[in-house]
Image 1 (cartoon, rainbow, N blue to C red):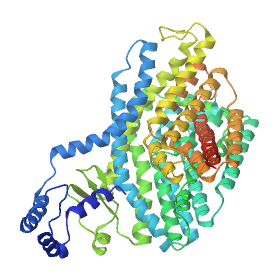
Image 2 (cartoon, helix red, strand yellow; image 1 turned 45 degrees about the vertical axis):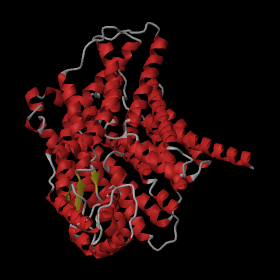
Image 3 (tube, rainbow, N blue to C red; image 1 turned 120 degrees about the horizontal axis):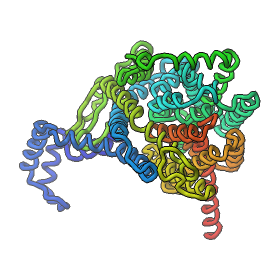
Image 4 (cartoon, rainbow, N blue to C red; image 1 turned 180 degrees about the vertical axis):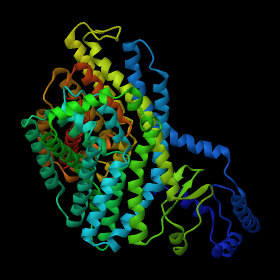
Length: 625
């Protein structure tokens, strides 16, 4: 879709060879007045040939490449700058100093890393997934398609940039306060990743089966949400309340920059090919792409909760404590050995994340689909991606040559971009996003109580007023972070189109931002006032399910998917580390839960906004009658 504008302009300014003489005769016979000057016939033909040759002779300059790089960096610069700037406005007055220089270095690495990763993702990983999605219905049976989607969902989660935030969070948990939580995030951190990946894989499998079997989205939401909340209550009843926040936060972490586009793209590719001859309206086709993100936010919660139960049943508490003591007794040089040094650790993490995903996709395309790997075209001049394709397809379909300024490269080059981008992003996470969010979260209690190292604490003598100010700070932090998410803007445009303008993009952005802000605010109040997370989630999802039952399908799909879209690679590390810092300072057993509350909030707010839109439409129809 990005290629269509400049391809259309290219076709308009380059007439085909077969029509040159006819155009010349028409120009000689009739003088047509236009908004631009039209040269004579001979001059037109001559200038046309000169224009073609001049386009061929043109070369991209350094200025074109620098402009392209700046435009790509600009989006992430705004996203990271908005939330980081807001946190600094709180940090500097509270700490009365600037953060260390490494924090600013880390933030710069985050911007560069996520830009490079998304560039490589769009030019390498996404075209591979599209080829796979288009070929699966022709070469695989139904069970084979389900298995492929399941495995791809697992591989996508391992490649998710925001998953690295969980490793940082594990370093701040204390084994004496939450032994099972500590053991999961330190000794069993890779099994936690596998459990989350298994949940996303199941979500991709069930979501694709829903598309092919015409299952009701509402019924699937009722069953999935009820099962997840019920298991959460059971886990708390057996004494594992410490893992509830972690489990629900993983549901938000997984639905980021990699998982959502690939799973959606693969599902849409399968369903569009499978139902090519099925008489379905365009609106219904568009709505079918929603729903998988919802499941990808719920099923990982179930898997992590079950893993926590298994860990508690198989590993004695004494062994967990002994393991923690052994780690403490290890010398500093050994603990920070060669494999844990930066950037070695980041390289290992990126390799573990990217290689399984790309290896699986390439094997499926080359050995099962027997298709060539795709090429991607990028218009450096217009800063646009073209429609992914390969040389073989382009030659067979006799498609026109790409416009001037277009560069073609192999998809594996894009994969390398994503690989190095992930390494740089993880370095930025270690030195920038993580420490900044952690220090801000640790200083929040200084608004209403004394903290060592926070000079003006308590900043507000009245404790109640101080807590209210802390909640207000959390609200606007989440509000700013939500507006900074690029994926939410794209979702707003899609929603406005599907509802024929009834649900405006601005209304969706406002509803989601308010929902996330309200959810994170309640999460902060929960930590300060020590409210039970399980029952807050229970109340939140009961309200969401009740609103779902009386809402239209399009609002249901958008509302439940918005919970995953708002928590991406930029906001997750900051919010997660802020919660860890706040919980550590307050001495809480469980410092997770901010992302969980920030996910249920937009579901309720968007469903309420949808009901308001329906009421307005009904009132306008009644008044016209």
